[in-house]
Image 1 (cartoon, rainbow, N blue to C red):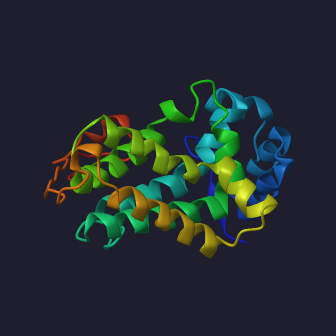
Image 2: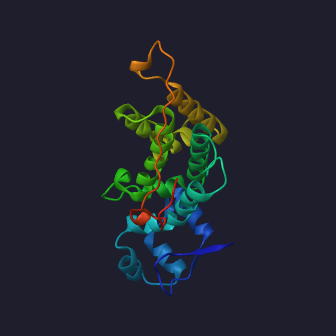
Image 3: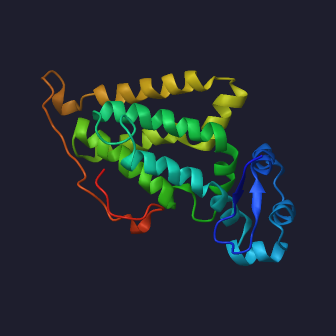
Amino acid sequence: VRGRCLPYGEGITYWPLAEMVKAQAGMLETDDVAAEAGVGKGTLYRRFGDRWSLLRALIEEPERDFQDAVIRGEPPLGPGAPPVERLHAFGAGLLQLLELHARFILAGDNVPTGRYRHPVYAFYRMHVAMLLREVLGEGTRTEYLVDSLLAPLAPEPFIYQREILGMSLDEMTEGWQALADAVTSARSPDEAGTAPGARSACIDGFSASNFPVSRSICL
């Protein structure tokens, strides 16, 4: 079984992916992590501060890989595809990430600052907002729709739909993409009865100092 190293921990050895599966099944105990890492429980708390910070650290790598693919990967997820195609790819990619790590992400979202204040959510929000502005233009309506599209991509509704309702990943992806199509094709009240104008907006770049990726880029 391939292992992965706990971040920020000098001397901390590999924690097998089998333990991640165990953690996702809701059986994570700090003592187990410390034993598998070959360190004392106190070392973990000194490195990470609390259990929630540890959980966030364990999912940081797959989240960073996904962000990297959004920023500089191949289209349609990465730059170069039309905004609606990129939006479809973003939703499909994030649902795939949740398929692998939803319980981890849900536990990590229980930090005191909450999901919405975390840099990962800020990155997702900025990316979806950029794509929607290219289609719908600026405005508070667009800002509202950004969060409306991100809401079903949270771990809690994902687990509910996947495990309780029994939806397949394909069904959830098709459903979310249909929602995205409905949002991007909707016209504002001001445009009702008229031909939609050709409006676009873009973000030229951003400083990644507040985000898990580490350089200024152009989305």
